[in-house]
Image (cartoon, rainbow, N blue to C red; front, side):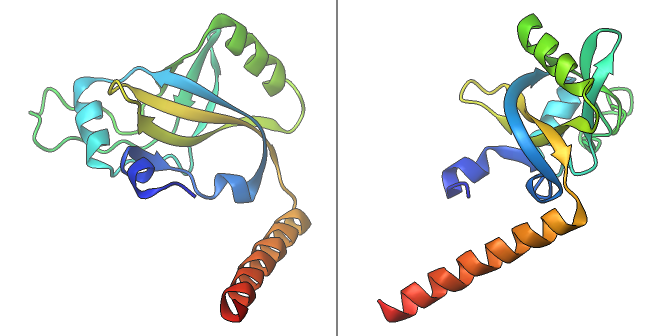
Length: 157
């Protein structure tokens, strides 16, 4: 889990991603945003829970990510909340991701959107394979056991 200082820099997190998917590889990508989108992201009300990344015209895009309109901006300066946003990755990384997507059952899932030390918005993308229902049950059972074990150790010691 992230510390409190690390949690402050996150604009949006996809907490269900690790529950719903096996994450094979994680990659950091830049994201092209307009000014009102950046201001709205800093407010922290964005959502990447139903978002996914994919190729479009040989480039990587983030689809279905919700960044709400920035209310203080004028009507002309507003952006569309769920528009596709271009992700910035190196060509070698893009080729690796494209090869991963072509495999059956593999998708690109955004894990989080955050601001780095220089103030740039970044997206953490995971190369993921979907879990079956029995896999989800097993991970829930493991998490419950870890929680009970920690509680037992705390009470005894």
